[in-house]
Figure 1 (cartoon, one colour):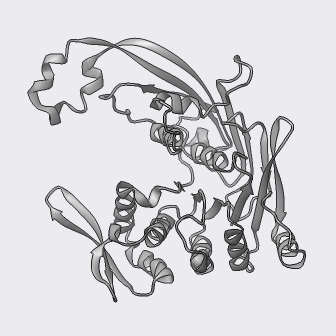
Figure 2 (figure 1 turned 90 degrees about the horizontal axis):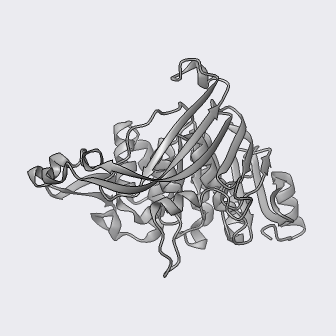
Figure 3 (figure 1 turned 90 degrees about the vertical axis):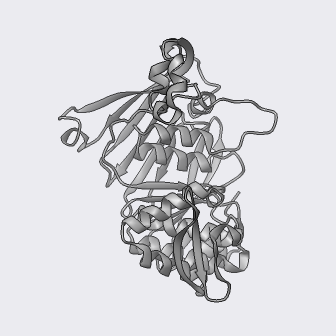
Length: 377
């Protein structure tokens, strides 16, 4: 079951009034470099949790910055807004969706500011850890740079939940460029769960540890190990081990290799581990995968994507993924033959806007298997 069937993005990064219609349960986005594939996933991630400061920060920082270019966290957040348009309009973005979602539309504007802020406001969350040595700085005011994002949310049921019957919700998110500043807690709009897996997620130990902790707490460990066994039947168990009091590692028990930390295995297994642990977390929600084929050998694509698609269907997860690989597109096509709603979108530039060319399953099968045509470009 698809949770959203239409998605519209306006003035988010390089996207101008992009309309994606007829989404299925399994959706693959292809297109040239810089066509906006990753931006679609980032926009949906923000749409699902628009008052989460970490979500804005993560969306801004997940992309690599070219060597030699210096940028702050504030710069990266402002880059989420369309640049190179009318200066009066560049600080505004809008994302909307139709389907089975509580939120229907999210819009945002931003403004930069410089203010004098007292140091205690900035470091109060760290004071206990730093001890009395930080107290001497408590009375020192300091000028900081920041941005404020005014987020406006509307939806059919938003007003009947945590926002006391307000037809439209307005909240201001504040980001300060200071090493001691910590994000305050924000209101959370009840919505569907979502997780974005980027090409580097499997190399980030904090993410894999966090995902595995949530799997264990949700009593989904056995189910997740079964998912891993689709990729490697020799995997017997996964646990945390603690080499030191302050350090934890994810340990894999393997029938052939014995027990070893996850990071000692290859990129392929670590990538699949990240995907497998992500699925239980986003049950009844969205899984967003940027560069689906990352770190998975071409001979393992069909087997890996087979369990991925099956797991998404079994857990009522709507999958949206990007790929540059023709082999990944064909493997996804092959394992989705029995999926009613498998769709491929090709993003392409036409004049000053991006459009999404839609290919349903029947069209994909015809173009690839009968005509041998290229769909990516």
